[in-house]
View: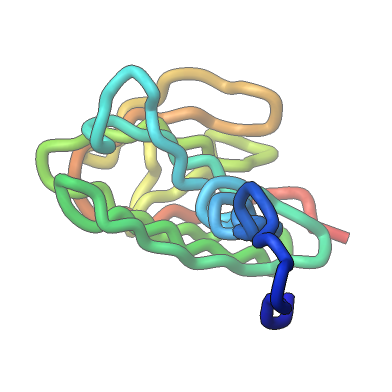
Length: 147
């Protein structure tokens, strides 16, 4: 919009059109998988559920919550999903790990099923669902290759 000419009125309403306003939410939630829990404000508890797409083989995002930095960094190659996550102190997260075999999910150097701070909850549509306490975790999971 250019300058107003003599006698012209300024248009009513906002000229702010947040056309691109949803992209950042998609990167955090839809791709990196960092989602707030609407029942617990300030990310006291949150969800991590990465979005896997055939054209995207890795994603990384961090969010500075009231409790500290939440981090999600995943990659997919050769039928292996690798995911590094950080859960801040005094928080917990429900995580959805994509897998074709939940018994072969590793955390650090051992099976996720015996890793401190990791509690298996259920299997849900191609994901193994765990509850995590605060800490730094490194998961590896077998997945179907993304083609």
